[in-house]
Image 1 (cartoon, rainbow over the protein chains, first blue to last red):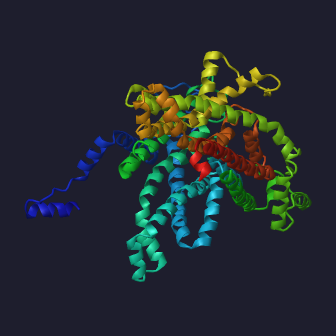
Image 2 (image 1 turned 45 degrees about the vertical axis):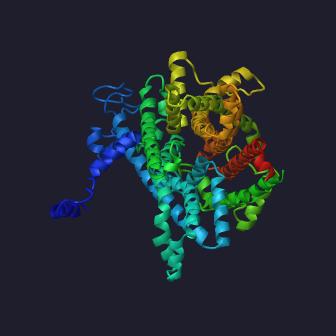
Image 3 (image 1 turned 120 degrees about the vertical axis):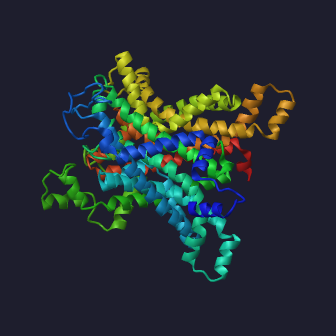
Length: 299
Length: 318
């Protein structure tokens, strides 16, 4: 792209100057300031998760680094917990768990949801009916109850929690994709593809898929927010990430409540981390929805 | 009436599929259920083949799957889900002693959420673009991002720090001492209600903003009706439909939220029962509770639908 633009400029004065991506980002940020702020926050969050080691400055597993239940100080920014572990380090490493669970559960949810949502209306009346009843049934559960039930079967662990949250997020994506697919199916370009003898899989994935993805992109950001909250809730209940792996939800359970009088910081910082991360994904999702789908603006 | 009858009938296949899903889910456990129950949560228990065989028989695990399913679902209809493996009490009698707390908690949370959400949502729409609007929206987006259990933990922190509050040891039923009971539940209800309020307030605002642009609102104003009356009697009533939809959807948050918040405040309700049962590997109870949570959610949505039709004659007569 840049090479082409450069070549065009070299050849003479171009009619329309192509905007560099920096300019475009600048324009978008002015239009959606909350989106820009949240995007920066998300980049920071991902950076913290990737470079957890250098950021944390301490080993999140190391017991007795300072005294136990030490208040926040220059040495331990967020204080220490009841085992004398550095709370800041644990929160930094906790970002890894949250983002890992978020990434893979969203991948499961959007992947399966999109495929089911496209196949269902194309497959014919009866398969569609049966698939939709299953989707209805999945919607009939309060989400957290369904993920708790799945985790109760699979057992506690990061992988299990990811799978549970991923499954729970399938129906929403499937329903959105199905309704978009229904809208696209009767459009001329799909009919044209059919007329020239394209086979169904090709039509589904080359012609329909690219045209139903926009609403899915919006669901992805909200999906991250939901997944992080769900992982935190499950870990809080002791059904998610097992100790000693640091996870924000788990840091708020047990000891944080037991020592709430002596060490209130134990109950404050992990919750703040969850809230800020979820808030960033929510705001980013809102901004993306506004940018991609102007009809929904302000709703 | 016909519409409502259709809605009632329509949830039956959903509930059936739900029951099959749960049944299948509980049967795909990696390993043998009886062995896992006997091994205990940390896998340290001892197992001999005779015990496993006895437990399998007791749980009907030795029967064909369709028969097991029919037995379970038949038991549900007779309100008999067998005994808890942990307490050895009938599951439904355990439920009967815990359900009132959870139902009360759910209702209190819903009332709190509406008391907060409707005025803030309406005010935000009416005073659009002012600090009232911005703070109300900030409160709403924050509510969507704060986990309810953290709100609970923060409330406990505040109570402990400023009021020397100590968590109550025993739970007091509403019939025993309504005031003590209220004090025990109000903080949990606030933690859950706040989250739901955020959802509803956001929808109230945007729905009302849309309605305020309608012709009939202009007509009402042109007739010289006071603005407060225009908003409350003409606009809000018509703006309520999407709000009611979101209240119905939000009930999932409240019902699911009770599980987490009962753990925070150490309340012996159905949610706590669910978590305890998972920790005790009491799979028959987990299976039954999961099913009942789904049934309650479906029924609650049906009630929401009733309100919907009551408010909107167009649905009733079409």
